[in-house]
Amino acid sequence: MGEREETGRLPGEIVEVYRAPRRSGETRDPREIVEVYRPPDPREVVEVYRRPVPPRRAARTGVPAPGAGRRRTKSGLWKFLACLTLLAGLALAGTMAEDYFLSPRWDEDPDLTSQEDREITIPSWPVGQGASLTVSRRTGETLTAQEVYRRLNPAVVTVNCSTSDGIVSVGTGVIFSEDGYLVTNYHVVRGGRRCSVVLDTGQTLEVCYVAGDENSDLAVLKVPPGELTYLESLPAAPFGDSEELVVGDPVYAIGAPRRLRGTLTNGIISAIDRDIEVEGRTMTLLQTNAALNSGNSGGPLINDQGQVVGINVAKYMSGRDSVEGLGFAIPTAQLERIINDLLEWGEVRPEPLIGVMVIAAERGLLVDSVTPGGAADQAGVQAGDYIIAAQGEDIHTNQDLFRIRRRLYVGDRLTLTLWRMGETLEVTLELEDAAE
Image (cartoon, rainbow, N blue to C red; front, top):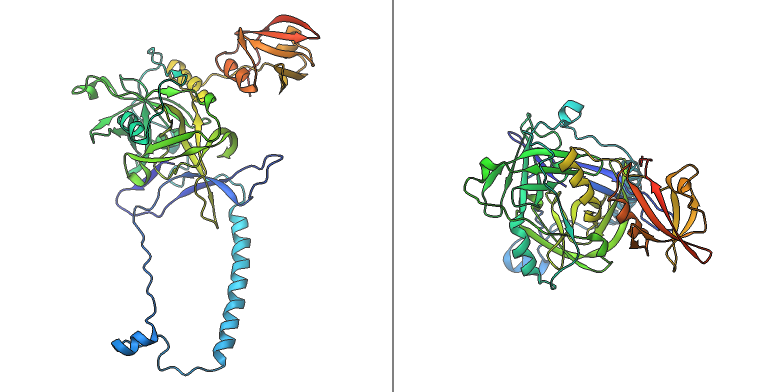
């Protein structure tokens, strides 16, 4: 949800819109779509309504009342009915046009249409420098909104990226290390030639590009040491485990919507593991009703203990209805692996496939089916087995197994503890298959 503007002219607001997929068992308004924000019109538009002067007041003030001096005729009724018929026809035509407009499509940024224009040429910073992002369990006491803001806002920056054509993309970023590494959305820096960040103090620092991944819409930036001449270190935000969130948990968002730097909004976790289609790919995201708008892209979603649990990325929009309170964030359970891959290798390495379909059960995870020739099949896992532990950690839900798998790479070994017909046994999988 980054903002873009072009110097020297005043463009209209440009957005990219995509239909949200309908999952089986869900009822969802097919008109709803996901909006990834692009350049909004910086001009404020105010609608001013003039109320007609009542006849009695007109008599006192001398201001003619509406329709004064006109002669009422029966033709006015027929004109009124004709207008109603015309409006009904326009409403039907508008609905048909909207259905066409909301058809699934790939909307390229009109200012970044070629691959060359989409390339990031921001001065680079080398990978493999030992930096990492750490996600911790929930710690500490519940904080008030004021306490959350005081603790986290210093680690939130406004990101400004410019292209060779003078276009500026405005988003938000989160500092996660005192030596100046920060995370934002990839679409905020896409096509960038130069990038800077504005601290909560108002100080502007030039930043370098470390690496990014367009599929996950995440990118890492670095404040070089030369920019820290007058700063011993930067404030870093703590990151918490999104796997510990439940629906109804209070959350906060800090960002620069419409360039209003340091804006705090609040809400709750509305859904977990929501599959949303964005730019032709499905992303599994946190859903929140905290207000997210253009400029919030790359900003933090924060739990009530002052930990970042997600990076804000998108919201729902509808072409006909005003939709609010449907925002989405990339959970930290996903971004921890992605960010650390980008820091170490400059790209996201593929996750391995275990090769099983499982169903959550009271005893553990029931193996519903096994992929022939897959890692689990070769290790002797059978349909009907219960997975009760992985790498020595108890398994109760699918997320428990996913969390452990995210730590592993192709070529690693995964030890599973199984329960089979009253017997406990242990098997080791050779993770050789990469996820597509």
